Amino acid sequence: MNDDVIFTPLDWRNLQVKNRLFRSNVSGRFDNEDGSLTQTRINWECNFARGGVGAIISSFVPVQMEGRIVAGYATIHRDDFIPLWQRLGEAVQSFDCKYLLQLSHSGRQMDLPGVHNQHRRALSATGHKESLHGFLCRAMSRHEINRTIEAFARGAWRAREAGLDGVELHAANGYLFTQFLSSAINDRSDCYGGSLANRARFLLDVIEAIRARVGRDFHLQVKISASDCNNVLPWEGRGNTLEETIQVCRWVEATGADALHVSIGSLFPHPLNPPGDFSFETIASTYDAMLSAGVDTFRNYLLFRYPGLRWIFRWLWFRLKRGFPVEGASRDEARAIKAAVGIPVISTGGYQRASLVREVISGGVCDAVSMARPLIASNDLPQQWRAGRDQPERPCTFCNKCLLNAPKNPLGCYELARFDGDHERMIEALMSIYATRADLRIPVSRATAGAG
Ligand SMILES: Cc1cc2nc3c(=O)[nH]c(=O)nc-3n(C[C@H](O)[C@H](O)[C@H](O)COP(=O)(O)O)c2cc1C
Ligand code: SF4
Image 1 (spheres, rainbow, N blue to C red):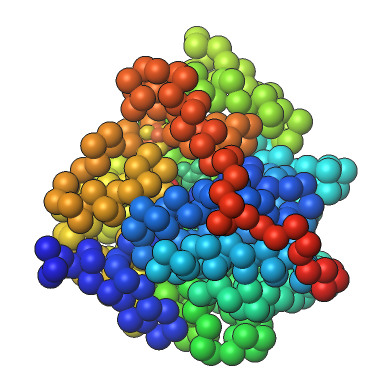
Image 2 (cartoon, rainbow, N blue to C red; image 1 turned 30 degrees about the vertical axis):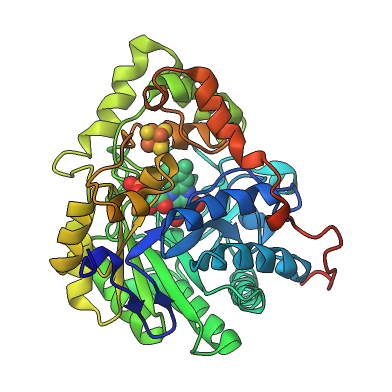
């Protein structure tokens, strides 16, 4: 199918992609405690590049150690990591696949503080604890805000030095940018709080600082939550509306972003993102890893652990899903944002059927889609679509067991049914990314240009 819109190339201002398929961000604990990336991450990313996506958007990559969600995720906070990212980028690019780095900061949404952050409060726009797990935090000073803006600019510069194809700011799903943007979270009284323009200032300052550092000809996109739906716990405020986000997207475009990546929700995970089921059996066996991370985690653990209490969390979680499909979960929001801006839009959430992807691209919802779980389940999904299948042979069930395992166990598909109930086969698939491939191996002596 030569005229298949899915396989039509993209020619954006600063990024050319061979098709409309982006691997969406997926974080897993592949890397070293100091933030240096490993061969395992290279193996992981190359599986998707080999499978036929046009571009990969990395996992959450902190620009500072104090912005990690979980220890063991690769970071971009040091100059001497540039050669490692370069090696990863080149490995992915050898499959004619682009590689974008997601520049990130957790703010207060820090699931497992790790040794660097253990005895200090996370930095945030606010001093109020995070709503679901009760992660404690303190409001950033102006000096800390300026330092963080600079860290994002340096992170973008390092990505460019590494020969990567662009960067994405993670301004969605509850992390530091959301904490500034959201009317339900940001309670500052300085020029970074209050009005929408003030709440957007931090994000726009970062875009400006990146442009000043790397120029206008390097791809810069922003992942943003179309609306907050922050009232997962009913007593929390709803947060930003779609209309407010559309205004933010217009400012983001005017400040120099090249594209938008549209998600939803002011927490991660959130009932609407990733859409699908919630496995109490899984979380009951993994949430203990987070017990000491927040002041409300023990309450949650009881709700997850004891079957007689699960209805409480089930009600809280599933009531917000009403009216939202699993497939193309926030496509209406992406369409509204696309209609309001001039830059391209990527839509994420529940894309696994070729026919749906054709429909949303042809129907003006978005220019491209990003996929996470369907590709975790079927790395070669683009090839299966090209061969004429609508759905993969063994589709992702959107059970979210991969996600709920992620803080404690290796990243991969944990849906036993996809392995015909064969636990050994599932473990074998999970372990396959640890194989050392000689052609991708990181050189032993890596450059040590000094900490940035
Ligand atoms: C295990 C897992 C890890 C994720 N990690 C990130 C991340 O680091 N950054 C991010 O922006 N989104 C992350 N997401 C969200 C995905 O990028 C994606 O937007 C979301 O899962 C919806 O797409 P899907 O239905 O194709 O999975 C993650 C999702 C999963 C399942
Ligand atoms: S565990 Fe597997 S089937 Fe379940 S959501 Fe993740 S990738 Fe899909």
